[in-house]
Image (cartoon, rainbow, N blue to C red):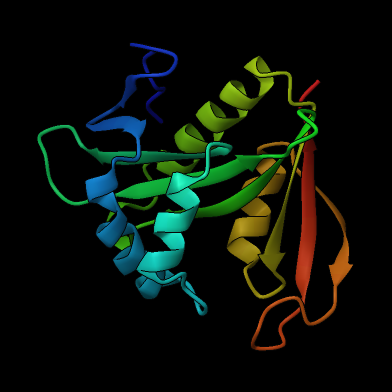
Length: 165
């Protein structure tokens, strides 16, 4: 599995045949389309714009190095206390799965959070999303408990977390 090269902590990185970087404004329609393709309850474009405007929100993205559509993205928000963060979303286009993009983006996000003094990060995952739970466990995340009817369609969520210190 290719490892990202560190061309710039805040700028961009390479991961095999992909370029990783901050999500640009022009990427938001592609994020909305990817959300519609992979999530049962996708965020609409206006909600993504509001999140992107928030100063405590970070979105990272992956695109083929030679250009092309968005391959994957990872979003999280720093909590106002400065010690925690919360995952907003993590998605990879089906055509680009199994190439380590999620691992590279989440890993970079955790690195950025740690550098800002964040000590822990939490998120919620549908109980039916066993692939995501396995992925997070491999990356050192733990399950804290089950949240009944967390999603609008009534599905429960697993609360997951990872300590960064």
